[in-house]
Length: 401
Ligand code: ADP
Ligand code: MG
Image 1 (cartoon, rainbow, N blue to C red):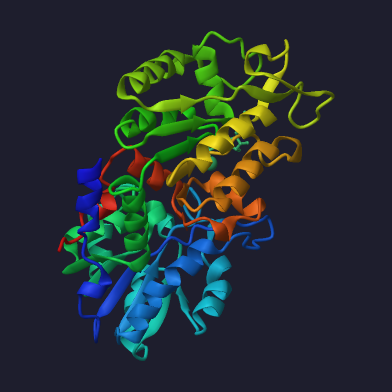
Image 2: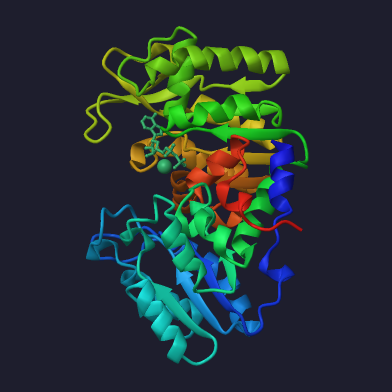
């Protein structure tokens, strides 16, 4: 894992190349959450792309084309148009941005515009070739630039035309400042961390996170497991979790990880008590019980107060904390306490804290601790793959120092 991260850290960035007079194409990640009226509920990803765009403007780029996806459209649909983010982008950049619907449109607009124009291309996933990493689309994208810059960490685990294929045809290909910041921040926690290192893992995507656990045993000293993730582990200890969310096929894998951790001297902490209920949305009853005593027909929806206390002691004892996955159904107030309390404890430490996972970042924001973490990643899936020890495709195709 450490070797892979060090390799990704050697990626060239826009600081290593001459921008003056060049046409640049930046793959950004403007895939931001919006409500049904298209109000942006969290513009972090747009904000985080601004330094790279400004760097290109300040260093005299001839033109700047921004390429991004938004959501998971099937073909063109106005619901997923990047038009919805144009105003916010212009406000954050403090300049006007030209919105263009097609690649052909970009070429013709580029020919007529003044220096340093910023152009935003419509949702790249409206083009069929994007997710297929189509060669023709990759070439067409590359033809729009002298320098290809990838700054879309949130999409860096995808082998798509705009994140991967394009690099093959672009004359110069480097990382943007966000991509660099993300990899350096993870490196600080995984490649050269202050010890002890703690991983807090939770949430509901058990199958996608369980491979991460066996890989990370060589890097961390302690692991705290909560959320639906812990239900599968508690079941592997023989506890009847009743109607709790458990991924039954993974129970043997959970048992294996507990054994492997013991062998490697990594301490794993599971909830000792849980907040359980008959129904998450319309609870008639909510009870705190020992983890092994979930009542018949109840389900565990949060870690209990004794677990919060235990986990807090573990957190206070660590110098580096990596957190991926909430401790309970934090979206529902009754079951948010475990996650929010741990967020306060992590915020109060002097440890280096790295947050991965979209829901985890959202939960920490709701707990009011967003600014008190050392680093919050803009990529959920991408950060998971990093923790799994993979070399992310986006980095693979960029130039190295
Ligand atoms: P992240 O986006 O941070 O990677 P996940 O997507 O894996 O996190 O998990 C977040 C989801 O897990 C939240 O919607 C939360 O409600 C759910 N969750 C956490 N604990 C439980 C639980 N005990 N039972 C059911 N769902 C849970
Ligand atoms: Mg999630």
